[in-house]
Image (cartoon, rainbow, N blue to C red; front, side, top):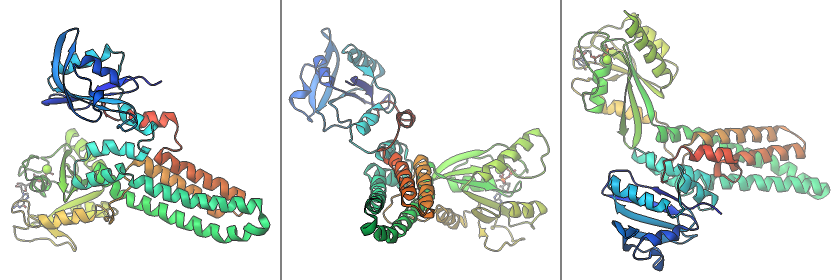
Length: 433
Ligand SMILES: Nc1nc2c(ncn2[C@@H]2O[C@H](COP(=O)(O)OP(=O)(O)OP(=O)(O)O)[C@@H](O)[C@H]2O)c(=O)[nH]1
Ligand SMILES: [Mg+2]
């Protein structure tokens, strides 16, 4: 029998605190109330919460009977006043009923273990809570509603059909061998294409979940910090007329058309004049190496320098946007394909925003993306196993590889996952979820 657990599920300090109780004995929370919420399941009951004759709070309580609750167990939800004193006293009273405080993510873990949601949906719960842009929330909600599970189940069914074809060929070689020989390469090819597409589209998924990292780089004084401020619409970074103003990395979140972006201002790249600047330049380089997009800023009001040329060469390999800043001043340099901007007047900023959005990877019509690093790794492992299956000629070897692929796919939805992986997933959750 599982313990009965309790935890506050709302942030501390609000007007109302929601306290959840889940487990076989949850209904005993009614012992603290002058009206039993279990008398009217799924309805709000107004009650006085008291212990040993002393009133603790005037609250609202709801009883959700198993299995129709979030966790699939009996649950009681108390809405009490949100002050620290009240919440602490209610939690103390619940402890005296033999309940124990819930561990991080324990409600959702129970929901998964009781079959209320698959593992990918359980993981989406935290993504929904953490989503800070509209499209991130949309992807997380779709995952919560089973979008990832449906993709995986349809792949599993394709592979299970292929396996049954192989089994038939092994058991009845005369009748089924030719059928399996004909059908297997086709099934494997379809499955590999689908997994490859999911992995390919996961770049946008990761962007939606973690934000697109956009690093603003360039030699000193070209206007990087001014551009950062202009895009953000605030005076976040210090701007001065002297070269070498920015020393450390400045990192700010913003939302571009529903896509979360992390804008990173960096120190101007040059031969450093002292230790602090050298560290700043090193940090700038590592920021742009780990960025999804590099905005290389050139000063359009001055001729290109050797430092600009070196940076154009160094940043050439990845996703890059070249900006000719200070276009409010007479133009002294040109660079083909560059966006002309002015941090001072705001000219060119809409084009810059569009260019960044375009590099966030293409949008999929139904909004379903694999956003979770664990899922992406499992898909990559499944793809390797499918490639192995396609490369062997013996049926039993192909069957082993297909079973391996199914094992990796099962880890995504949680049909094939061990307890330590589950612990690792749920310990990242907040308490009360
Ligand atoms: N006219 C004009 N001046 C600008 C523009 N953008 C920046 N500046 C000026 O250029 C100077 C340097 O700007 P910053 O934003 O500090 O340049 P930075 O690239 O961050 O410089 P470091 O931090 O030293 O690498 C300041 O005097 C700004 O006012 C622009 O679009 N037009
Ligand atoms: Mg700066």
